[in-house]
Length: 128
Image (cartoon, rainbow, N blue to C red):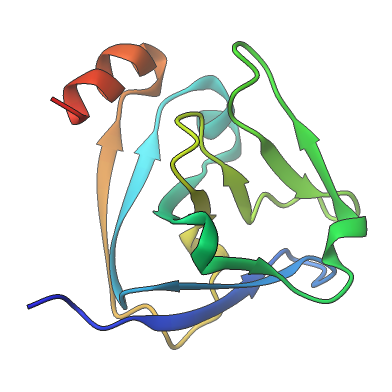
C-alpha cells in the first residue's frame, strides 16, 4: 500500500521565494558530499517536476548557479541566498531542502548519504 501524499509549503529565509510540493509525509533525504551540497550543508528529498510549483512572484527572486557538467541547476534566493530547492543533476525532479519545508507536514525524515563526489558511480549503482 502506498503512502498518501501531502502538500508541503516552504521557501527561503526572507520568504521572497515560496513554493509548494507534494510528497509523502515520510521522506528519504539525501546528504550529498559534492562540493556544492557540502558547502551549503544541503540535505534534500526529490519530488517529480509535476509535484512542485513556485508561488506568486518567486521566479523574479530566484537565480541559478551551475558548475562541472552544468546539469544540476542550483537555485537560490537573490536576496537571502538560501537554496530551498534545485533541479537535480540527473534531471529526475526537484530537490527540496527539507529544512526549508514549513513545520507540520513532514512526519519523518530519514537521512541517507549520497556520494556526489563520485556522482556517476553512485547514480549508476542506484539505477542497476
